[in-house]
Structures are given as structure tokens and as C-alpha cells.
Length: 281
Image (tube, rainbow, N blue to C red):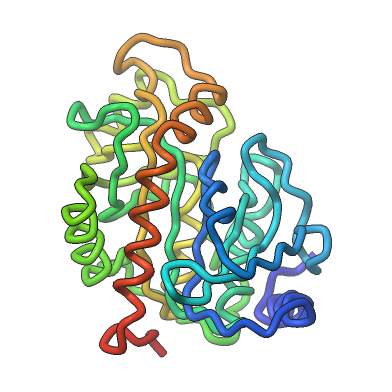
């Protein structure tokens, strides 16, 4: 199976057959954060199995659908569930939905995930705005032939758009939401990190760790898209507290903080819909 620009065009055509929405921003919903899609108006839900090139979602807490609708006063594309490299997928597939959203007209991307907290400044239940990331997955979704629309060597200096980060800060302040800021480390998984690995990540400058997001952001930047990202700190990383880790804890925490997350994203969408923040070309 190929995950090229041409394949993305075919997948986009299948979505266009179900809706004529003209969204300029896409939102990727991480583990347990799919409840935001239920807030969308005029929503059209398209299961992954109906989209060429999309495999079935297998992780608990991931619905497995593209949702097209309105939120924050604008049309958006939402991915409820994602593809992980640890499921046996290539990195190019983990980022394939971003290519599809770009083919549909999205020029901005909001990514979210559940993550383990490494920094002592982070508590379980915190929302952390991603300021940068560490790609420690051992692979890159851009490996291979240069795809139409891509930059061969994308600049990752400001992978997470500074303007979007300012808007997230002021939005959180307005809503009274505590929003931390930090570096997200992306690892392959599916095993959680060992305490020694967490010590290493802390020395490298990571504040939180997870198993997704990085491939999507890399492809988005190669396509010239602006990116904003938020992690939900669902547990303390291994060795921080001594407690055992589980996916059930991840889902329980995301359920607890979902209201704050949904309010933050909705208000962010409203604020970024103004003319002076028109999509990047």
C-alpha cells in the first residue's frame, strides 16, 4: 500500500463524495479525547473503512472515523483515532491522514495526544501546550520518494507555530484553564518507558512522552502547514512516582479533563478564524 500524494488525493475524493465542506483546519484527537467530535454541528462521520488507504482503528479509545462538521463557528476536519507505528504501520501511514486533510484544503493542523508527564512541573490532568518535540521513534514519514507538495528538507525550527502558541496561551488565560508548556518526546512503543529511559528523556529536555503525533507534525511541516499541539498529561511517566502504568488510567484521566480540553480547542478555533490568520499557502 502506498501513502503518497496521489493516494491522498484518492482518499480525499472519497471524503468529498460524502460532504462538500470547505474546512481549512484539521484537528487530530488523541486517546480518550474523541468526545470533542460530539460537539460538532452538522457532523458527517466517515468510518476509516470507507476511506481508501485507511486501516481499521485498533486502539481502545480511538473511534476510527473522519468527522466533517462545524465547531467554534467554522468548518473543521477531525480525525477521531489515529494510526500508530507500534501497530505495525509504516511511519508514512501514521501521517497519511495529514496528507489527506491537506488535499481537502486544510492548511492548519491542531494535534492532541495523551502523554506521560516527565517534568516535575506537570501533574496528572494538566494540559501541556507542545512547544517542540523530540523524534525518538527511529523513523521518519518523509523517507522515500519526494511527494508532490512536500519540501525535501523541511525546517523544524518552529514546528509548532509561535503565533498559534500565543493564541493558546491567551485563550487558556481567558478561560481560566491552567496550560503548561513543554517538549514532547515521541517514542515507538507499545511498551511504556522504563524508569531509566525516563531519566534519559529528562536529560534530553523532554517534559512529556508519548507514542504518536511526531510523524503527523513532520508531514504537516513538509507541506507548509501551521501546527498547534496540546498533550493531556494522563499519568506520571515510569519512575516518577513508582506507580504502575496502564491504558485504563490514560482513558480515565482524559475523561476527567475532557471539558477543559474541549473548551480550549473550541475557543482556539474561534480565535484563529479571523482574517489576519488566513491559511498558509
